[in-house]
Image 1 (cartoon, rainbow, N blue to C red):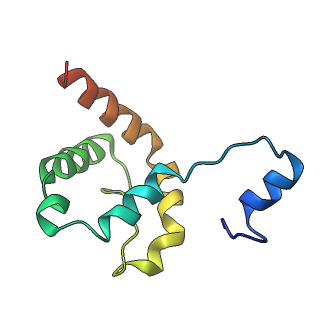
Image 2 (image 1 turned 120 degrees about the vertical axis):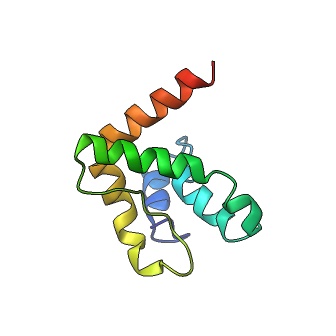
Length: 102
């Protein structure tokens, strides 16, 4: 998708050379999660449980977000689809988290 010669970024830059590009935050998180220790990966299980509970309360068909990993590489095409399907739940969850952090 972001290939050097034929990816989306290259095509956009050919049409608009002044355009800037940043790697999606979801993908950046996935790239980092492959290299960080297990202690850091598991540091916030509470957030996952809270998000799962919110999804259950809202009657969502999904209970968690998918993340890229070496183990689940087959689901990599479904990550953005799942995020779009859970966009309302994610928005509410993030709003609640920001309210608690104040």
